[in-house]
Length: 166
Ligand SMILES: [Zn+2]
Image 1 (cartoon, rainbow, N blue to C red):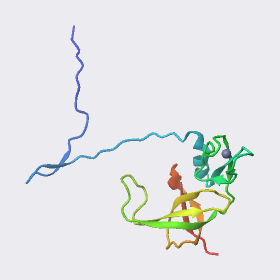
Image 2: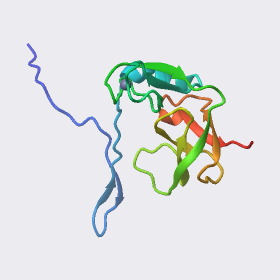
Image 3: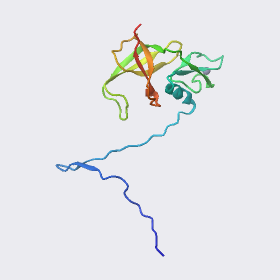
Image 4: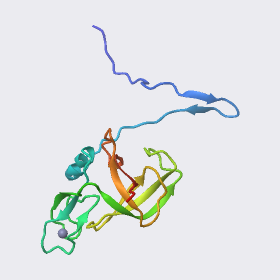
């Protein structure tokens, strides 16, 4: 009878040696898959896939905040009651509230640098929605229009903004 034994083994790929002198340096790519649930915010991300911007509004008539929230909140931050979904009418036109130039983004950023990160004010929305300007030079008070990726990213990056002329 053949004896079987459990044996741990190396299952990676040898790291690439990029230099030996004056010290050994290897290139050792690290990667991971992050599985993330959108939970109760699934309608927001499904909307982005379909080129629609969905926000939430508190259903409680006694709530002190009856404007829309964006990004959407599943439950009201003020009274903790469930929110109702509403679509922002198309075309989605907003106003640049403020902006910043991103020269060096964080690891894993999926927007080419440099780019303009813009904060967009939308009528009837109580929050300022963060986003990115695809092209053009932002100015405070400038009108921008929401656009959606042709091939959905299935993340918040699916929505972006372009200057709205007229
Ligand atoms: Zn509320």
